[in-house]
Length: 312
Image 1: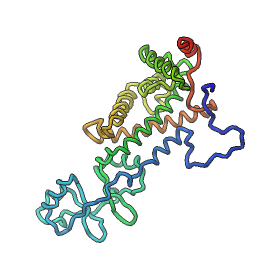
Image 2: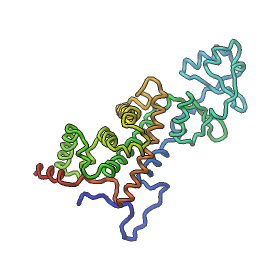
Image 3: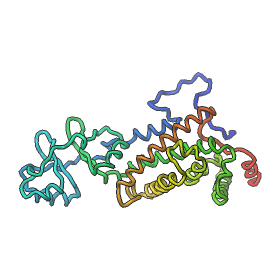
Image 4: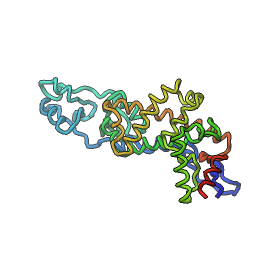
């Protein structure tokens, strides 16, 4: 093998490839796949607790607190009313007196994407889930701690790393390793040589960590602007630091919301992350289209020759 990666289009062999909803060989296609993996129905709690209208408000308030719920629908033919623990606390009579209509903007479809749900949970603590013929579940910010949500977020971060790999070479050129600090470059080259000893067909670019890729991307003002950042300081403070912290928390089993005391902060950062990843994917696909090569660009030139000789 010469280390080069396959092209986007199939070789002229006459083979017919199966059709997919999105091109999984493109960076944008990977983003679309990540978007479609998790739906509201995958994380919502369908074992709803219904409150009897005639039940004492104080009793139901105690029951909801005991099971950790902040809201519940009222049991009636339409199931279009609900109440909250706060409303029950302020009510001296029955649940009926604390009932209120469920607003349309507090209902989300069970088939809605995880991304839409997370964006909406920035503005409200919970939503009622419409499934089949009516309200069948409730989904809260706490549900974002489920492992499947963390897996989806990691999918975006992996997509970001791949897209940045293309953009680093595209924007910084073949001498991009010169932009690494001395310590980082030594680390990356050591990883490359170790992997080469084990016969892995990888380039130096494949040995970059997430931190390396984010830092290299920050070396090009034009790329930062294309990704939506006005300054390098803003990029590092609002994206690099929280992204690395979020990745580390999820990777070590702490979940999406563990990176800050206020759950709104990681929820808001998820939306920022998704937006940047989509921009990076579009830019990377455009760069690949211009060069006619796949995204796994290899580190070539005199430096890699020197590394290879040092390993002989």
